[in-house]
Amino acid sequence: MMNEKEIRKDFPVFSKQPQLVYLDSAASALKVRRAIDGVDAYYTSLGVNVHRGAYSLAYEATKLFEDARQTVARFIGAHTEEIVFTRGATSALNMVAHAYRDILKPGDEIITSELEHHSSFLPWQVIAKKTGAKLVYIPLTKEGRITVEAFKSVLTDRTKVVALTHASNVMGYVTPLKDIISLAHQKKAIVIVDAAQSVPHMAIDVKDLDADFLAFSGHKMFGPSGVGVLFGKKNLLDQLEPFEYGGEMVDQVEMFDATWKEAPLRLEAGTPVIGGAIGLAQAILYLQSLGFENIHQHTERLHQYTLKRLKEIEGITIYNETAENPVIAFNIADIHPHDVATMLDQYHVSVRAGHHCAQLVSRFLGVVSTLRVSFHVYNSIEDCDTFIEAVKAAQTFFTSF
Image (cartoon, rainbow, N blue to C red; front, side, top):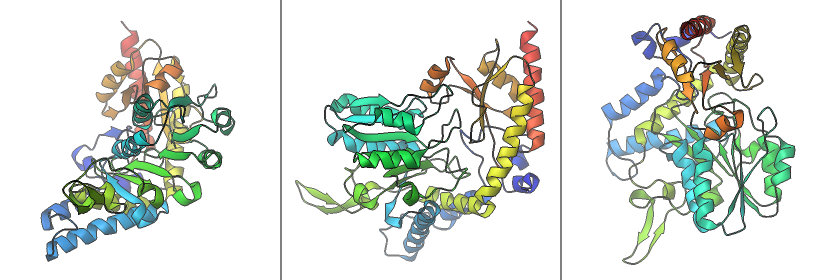
């Protein structure tokens, strides 16, 4: 069994905020010391650019940066040249969509879902308008899930792109991607996976999934903010028109023409996120040291315990009781979620309130916003109890008027 008291020692924020009950890891996870130290060591001891200098500092920085790329590649079962460092999952997803502005044509179809984070489907919404392609939504089950059968119902010979979440940031449902990707490839469609919520909680093998592109962020997995990853199959990355131009992505430049390097460098214009990549690699190594099976057992225990206690409180609506990811979306009758979240903060409990950058989910649920609780390795049963007591106190306070 995971010892969260020992784990909390790995996260410096708890030494500053010992009473903190942090239940918003789905938005941004707390930062692990070894990731912070990795970033700090780069800026303190090196601080120079990569790939360009012929001096020893530049060589050391380049080695750390490219070692980080190897760490990420091994983490998801990819080849090193299939890993592009970006500013985050949003940047990565936009990069792919931007390139298809010149590929899609009127009548082509883009399949997505109402479960998506805005960064997963809004780029395609814009590209559809610019190209005349059509956005097609997978019908969700009554529970709000994506199923293989529902995907089949919208897959056609006109399908060119499938852009889907691996795990919903609001509902916590895991998409049956392997079967969906296989079906999409039978139609020669490409599949872009938003894995921002799944990568911190489960082992992912992009070769087994056969995903064409997959994106995730460092800040949701104990790493720095401002760094993310785009995985792409090498032949597809080399076909992508770069999102930005300049710096190390250039091969040959003439006055009226230029050529670009092969991936991944062609997609990393300018100075890359060097410190962020180094910190992300350390966060990945930390996750691997814990083991995903151990992480799952721990967060599942907290998830189920909190669900049980929440269901005992009258006036609570829970929208995702069967979620696979450790996320609970709920509301308290007649109390606005933002009021509840503000009240919970008085008890040092941090939860998310709002539409969670996924307004289509709120529309599907028929609500303006929800409260969301999400768990990770530094949370404990005591955190869950504190949260439940804070919810009861908020309910009593607001219903007393």
